[in-house]
Each structure stands twice: as C-alpha cells, then as structure tokens.
Image 1: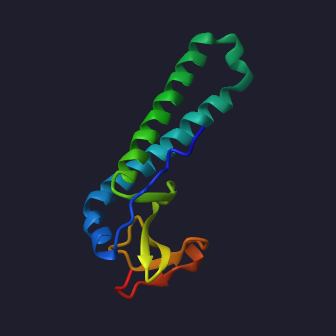
Image 2: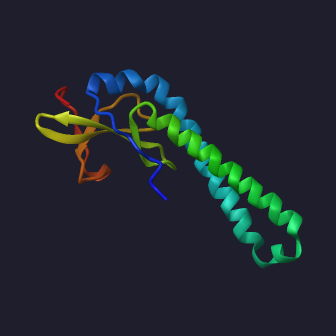
Image 3: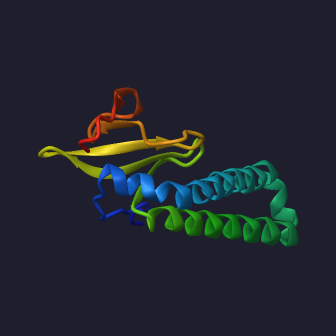
Length: 136
C-alpha cells in the first residue's frame, strides 16, 4: 500500500504562515481522528478470540474500525491539501517543504504553536529545529 501522506508542493515561509488559519482546525480534526482510530483498533484487539463466537459484534467492531480508518484518511488528505506533510498525527506535528537558499528543508509547526517559528533539514527531525530567520 502506498503512503497516503503525500505532498508535492513547495512553499515559502510567508505562504506557509498564510495557511495556518485553515490548517489549525484540520490538524485538530486529524488528531481526533487518530485517537478514534487507535480506540477502534484497541476495541477490536481487546475483544480478540471472543469474537469467534459473536459474529455480530465482530461485524460491528470491524465496521467501526473501517469508519475510523476512513475518517483518518479524509482528515490526513485535508491537511495534505494545504501542502502540509504530517510527521506525527497524534501531536499534530506538521512540516512544509521549503527552500532555504539552495537547500530543501522543512518548515516545522506543531499544533498549539501560534506561528511557524522553526525549520529543520529534511534528514533531521523535530530535535533539529532551528529558528526561522525569514529566508525560508
């Protein structure tokens, strides 16, 4: 199965910042969908072997999990539509592809932050964040 978290757009810092008002509620929805999917998987897993004797419950739990998967997929697509790559859907960690000089980097934003204030090289993660200086 291919990775559904696909972004092909490259933006600058100003454009990424312009997208934040629309991105915030979409990321909140994605975070909620992520928790819903985890709960649906856990319910199915906890029921385990007992489901062999209860086909109606198995069908209901499977249907609930599929619905949770679809909500997650749609929420992820909604974030990606804004040119944002989802690094961690549980905490709302988002990256935008951008150029910093001649280097491709990620502009990094986390749900709850007021603004995009950091970037990091593509091959580094959140721990490698550096302050933006207006040139990304």
